[in-house]
Amino acid sequence: MAGIHKTGAVARPRSPYLPQQPLLEPARELSPQAERQSQPRPPRQSSPGLRFALDLVLHSAFHPIEGSQQKPVLAAPGELAVTFIGHASFLLQIGGLNILIDPVFAEWLVLIHRLRRPGVKIRDLPAIDAVLLTHAHMDHLNLPSLRKIIRHTRRLRGEAPIAVVPDGVEDLVNTLGFEDVLRMRWWDSITVGGVDITMTPAQHWGARMIRDTHRGFGGYVLRHGDQSVYHSGDSGYFPGFSEIGRRLAPAVALLPIGAYNPDGFRRVHTSPEDALRAFIDLGAGLMIPMHYGSFRLSMEPFDEPLPRLLEAARRAKLGDRVIALDEGETKIVARQDVFGQDIFEGTAR
Image (cartoon, rainbow, N blue to C red; front, side, top):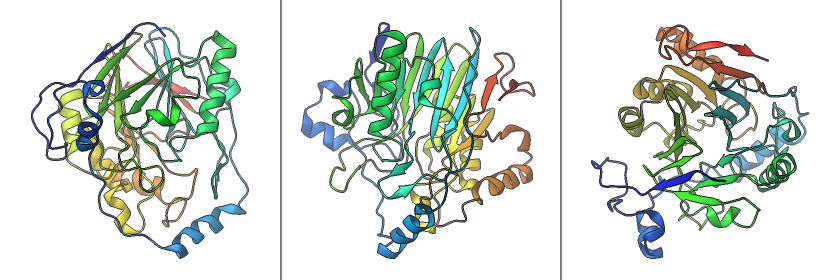
């Protein structure tokens, strides 16, 4: 795809959660040893045990999949549209581009059965310009889904989309058939077809298996003119949300609210209340929750996260700024007064 420009990281004020090595050079110019040293270490976690894993499998294996599917609403020129596919998967229409983030359309993640259908079928997607992957965990990077998206876009447009991945994840997608694979580290920026994409920090970990802890992770802020969207990827609550808000000031924040029980999971996943704190720290105008309702990945009641978030938002007098989308639902974001009452022009179903 034409119109891709990459900017290497430059010296910036140090953050308490950033790697200790300054990011002074583009990632592609670092030696393999320096790249490994620059990756953040995952928070220490104790294993929840075999019984916990079996409980997750059994809670979903025999549960029928629910939910409906619909065609995404296509945005008019100049509009920003956010379509919730399910879990952490979104279609963003911004700057005339169609961008997927963490697209997972699979019904099974190894032994974990999906409980709600993706709200959109791959065959109903528009031609995709770019696929952004926040990290290598299987509920965010699904190889069969990526192959199908590539084939679908080639049929529609004759060429594949590009992929944008954290540093250390490129080997997982290099051979799938993407037009190009761009790897990024925290605070790196690229421009794709007039849309600026900045990779942001997170408090999580990147290993897909056990020993591949070199893999990066993070979120993304996308910006075109006065339109901006932040997808956090997976993260526990941490000071980085405030810094992302200061540096990038996203108008719309897509934030995770599930997988927080046992309580130790909150080191790497936000609870509903943690996510609301992150939204406040970011200073964004609108929050759209994600990472709940599709896969059972933890032990909180399956239908608990969203009501808890909405109640916390009501108590904080932020109820009108938290919008939960059904799977397949599209929101059209108003370009004028993005922090006012008219942040959305309407809801399309």
